[in-house]
Image (tube, rainbow, N blue to C red):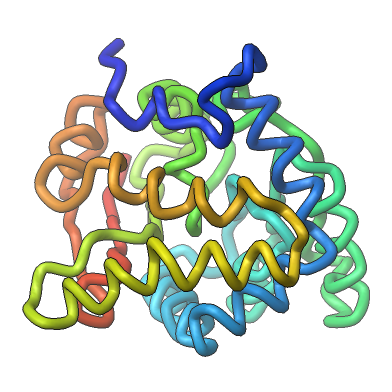
Length: 246
């Protein structure tokens, strides 16, 4: 399989620990402040982006959903509004999952949503299990993008829907320059102050810059086997929704 440039982007380039373990440790460390920082740094617009994902899954409602790299389960909990049979969220960070479990109980959706620790590149589910699979702001953290996408393809039922919500690069002047400054300098500073983690929010702009986007990402999905892949930019291209079917 192809190794893309972003596969080499790791939170700590000098560490001998592989990317997967570094990402796990990084998110374990920032889990207590993760939701607060997300709302603060995105001004809450990330919630609106996730709502757009939910609207695209109306055709799969009542089915079984998989939310990969679920983090603290924001999207998994929102998926419960579609009244599916089941939503399973997986992540490699146990501390993020612990926060997610608390939120699931608060939202009273524990009968629908459940979380488990698992590797996105080695999903513990049978072939053709899910009617839809989602990833929000987690695909760029895959150690091997092909393997992660291939696993989601495997566990989706024929005709199943894949939706990826991920940061992308703004291309419109002067927003491009403003966002680049905010992402490279303001975001890491805010993250460092509140999370006490010097690495996590410096890694963020690097991982976004290296991640394939637009037509390149659609081509990768097609190579994996997905059909009808589309890319929809959001908020002047700050983020994008990728949608495809098995």
